[in-house]
Image (cartoon, rainbow, N blue to C red; front, side):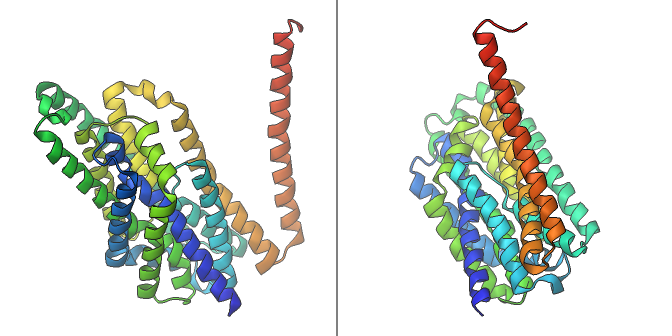
Length: 360
């Protein structure tokens, strides 16, 4: 019974981090474009919209997370704690760094780690999910890039569309509505990442899980979402009101469609790629060289692998103790860290040699 309560507590903490990461990013375009200047108001609106999305439309993705990747009979209380711990740890660290991270990737990665440990994965369903992790963000980029070119032409011809004069109010309203739509889609798609394992293990019913998860996602968006909102809204590229609306409506529509088919997709990647699309249309592809873009891409690649390794390690440590597997994992980790550290030392010594005028 105590382990059950621990599983629920970890899931709710995870839900708060989902609100801080994926949900808060939904209003990044509106905040960056200046449609909402008050950060607290922006976070309140996304929390409300995400709550409604989770309650009204989150059921299909919950089913996928709870029984579509690995057989539901593997979802014991102990395994649920391990899945959520692996995903939560990865997401929490990314929030401390202020990096928008896909909760879908860390959750699915954590479940895959369990499936590998038990040698039981629905590979057909998993291949579809992973392929859509690539397809949907890329589609978002090209849609917003195309629309961004049209918007650039229209704004140059009609200055009012840049948010000047009487058009400012209405374009701002349009962008805020788009941000709320995107947050609604976040609720549909991402809340399942926290409560899906609980539903799969029959710890909570689907309805109770959605209501409870929605509540804590909203709480997380308000209390922890500030850094991610700043990253998506201000550090990637500045958007006009019309450009921001394009990002929000495109991302929201794509994620809602995926949610209706029960596919957990990386909302934050969809949003960020949309911002990059309009940014590339406006400033050219040179803006893709910005350091924050490289950092986000690195976290996207590492995050599912990190949560996979963590959950696989915990399964072999607690659920199915296996000394040999633990030894391999620890040895690989030590070798990787050692190699990175050694390369840093070598580069530092080379720089010191060149600076002192020595060497060949």
